[in-house]
Length: 270
Image 1 (cartoon, rainbow, N blue to C red):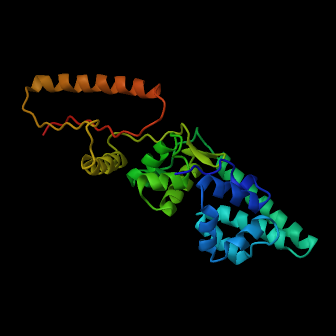
Image 2: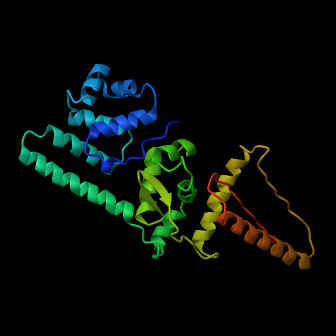
Image 3: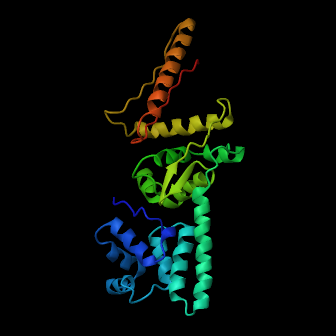
């Protein structure tokens, strides 16, 4: 799958430039697919991109939907169209003022990273309600999986769901929007081990791990072993596991982000 342009829409002053960058990133035949989505001849699409004709607001709305722009991006794109189509300088100035407000709003959202502030209980409840939140946050550390479209394709979930989660993560400082791509921050999401949210977190990922077992390859590893053991040796096993977890944590800190791996370790007396 082709990567989309790294140039964010909010930096654009001409909607045509964004369409061209978007289509170029999508690859061969994209202009034809755009013409089908807008139900217009390819010649008319060419005339619009050449500046001989303008998009109507109705066509622009359809195109935003086809390009899967989020609501703020759609507002910005439509405002660019309205500025071009405005019949007077006064109306252009009004639309330009609206455009600036949308751009400022986008910049405020992308720069809102309160890394020193802990999440509220309500925010934590949302974050730990589904494995999607922590998974998508992890994916924003990996090149090629940092836009809503890339994540949607990789996880096989709707782009609207991905956009909803990315908006939440960005607004809570868990990731930031930079040059059109989402990047994980160091904001803390820790909860106490005995918290109901921690239990939910374990449940979410263990349920997901059952799905992963069905897709395991020879490179993967799974180990489940109910055992009978002396009481005195239980603490020895726990010590070994804790030392291993510490060693893994040190390794992870210095390891480049390239793949997402589920790691679940249990040692529970029955």
